[in-house]
Image 1 (tube, rainbow, N blue to C red):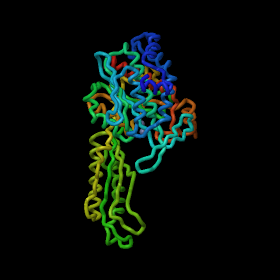
Image 2 (cartoon, helix red, strand yellow; image 1 turned 90 degrees about the vertical axis):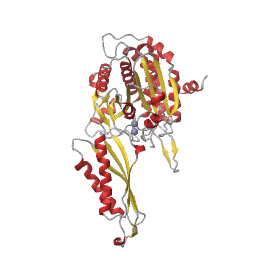
Image 3 (cartoon, rainbow, N blue to C red; image 1 turned 180 degrees about the vertical axis):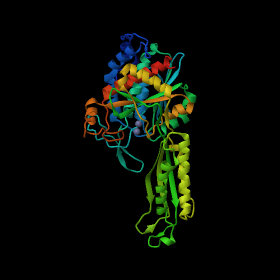
Length: 458
Ligand SMILES: [Zn+2]
Ligand SMILES: [Zn+2]
């Protein structure tokens, strides 16, 4: 018995491509010329038979979260499932990234991405399968670890979609590239996989698709946003240089704290005065560090800033404005040298753009299988998500949809006047209703992939 098989059996995962195929073969063809063709009933039969195993898998993922760049066990779990589904697997692509290639004759290539990393949060959900895991960071601090962004659900849907597509190969033609991505939360995972030769060593996709859980949507529903959906994320460090001295003799010093305060205030004018009011941007100073004691004027002050934009032009205008304001404010205050203004290129996450045509196609597919009232138009977010990097790098269309996770009772209670607010992602209380969420996620992802592979798009 191979180690992978042994591990899967201990996870109570007895599902194999063979057993799923047997279930699928029992399905019937849906009449009518829908986008999802005759295979939807087969997908549904396969999903219902495998759902208990996927629920177990989800709980194993939830109980065993791993921080960004440490996704060793998560990657091994997914690699094992891919192999059992007849998929060719390459591990350690850009860190703990896993690439699965499922070739099935001539046809389009579709990239399906799921991310794996968790967050340094102590879980407070009280769920029986809540994470009790802790990790000691390099600085000696011990922190709790939690799947508070739903990447355990993303792993589960990715694994289940791989099994379903592997079992239903007689229903589609082409190639599927399964990407189990590390380090999404720190914005480096997609970039490191691309830099490690993702698109040189493996087939180039014609389409990139992915999903993210959504804490505001009821389970059984999905959401979509045509065009810009997630923002460009930039991190900027500013170091202001003054001249230190005694707090009682400010005239003998140049105070970097006051200079930094002026810079912080002036930065607020970028969005309000420099950017077209019809375009989106955020400039937030999230950290200010200066000084040691009441009566000492320090030599330096440091600021850490997050910048969110959607377009290249607005991004450039905001970053140029930050530099201009910092430099000229410091000069006006008589600082001995210009401040360092450093845009941290390695932390940049490009905006995620949902190709409008591909999005419209996805909406048609989802509406067919869920009903139009379960497919909801959503506004874009100033949050970041590095999935957009794959399609942007190649210039091919991308589509990330969102998956509702909130059980019906909690969702309805939250709508009552004064009802309890739903915990957001990244909250210690974040949770999903696993079974219906997995069902909706796998049905949508598998049907969307199959429709693209079968050329139903365009
Ligand atoms: Zn997150
Ligand atoms: Zn996330």
